[in-house]
Image (cartoon, rainbow, N blue to C red; front, side):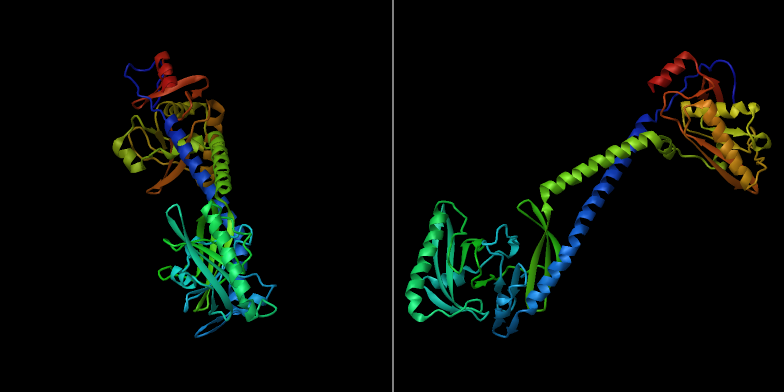
Length: 451
């Protein structure tokens, strides 16, 4: 219901939705940023999938090149297949022999630290140079010694392959003295490096070596393969793939098994720092774009999201008031100059508080209904939006719906309290005061701008 003249003396409380809409926009922008970041991360991981498939093929082919018997696993075919890219780790679960490791002679070798352990009791058996027949069919001359650095004990073992498929000839027995002396010399070089804190052993000339922390049994470094055994209590990864973080790098660990052998390969995803920067950049770009577009196009949508519009039954129970307005109808389902009251109510709700205008209900609360079919409903909605857009500046947030009540059509126009300072109808400002739409006084305008 509208009235001309000044506003009543009753103080009108203006509802501010600007903060509410801004909070909604911020939450929406953060959600879009999170989704965009997740998509970037998933795309990055998806790009690694072909490498994961290849690593699985490598693991399976590596295991196929190894011939196992109850006493051990022969790796001669694997050792002499130069065209084959080996798995990073191969473990015989029956003997707990580690048949392949990524050696330090490979620059930037990718290592899976949960498997970088060695049985120090086995290492301690070779305080004197001794010939050892490994479970993989090779014969090695092994020598070990221990050393203590800054209170930490280390085990060092070096080896010379006397008989191996990858060597042209077997070593004659008369050379054992020279070989033993060389093994002692190489072990001393490693010990000397440890004493001065140097952990780069790539200059060691033994066929294989290993440096192990005697207290934790964790491998500090190892070179080309020599006989290694995994200590009891060290679990192998489950078959399949999993994420792994090491030295600020992110990897996928691909594990395959044939029941006895386990083959493990690492696939690099990238440096964690750069991935974090990429994710952060994607997040910021997404939220900035979403924030800008939301401010530009979605403010009315978010304003309407907060409106709890009553049903026709609820409106009839409460009657006309601060948030409800009844209109008998619209002549010929179109707007004309005689329908200015409708625009005044829309502008008043937009300036004051959320409200709903029901068309097809008279001031006494009796449902009269509108005479309009589906096509006329569309025309009515289009015409109403057009007139509101032309005469109320800026365009207030509104939503139009139709309800059938006992065969009678009722139009429901939901108007949200907008986040603009004021909404003017043909240059005039209207506010809602109870069940009346009145022109605002200067003090009302001041409060509108302050709300």
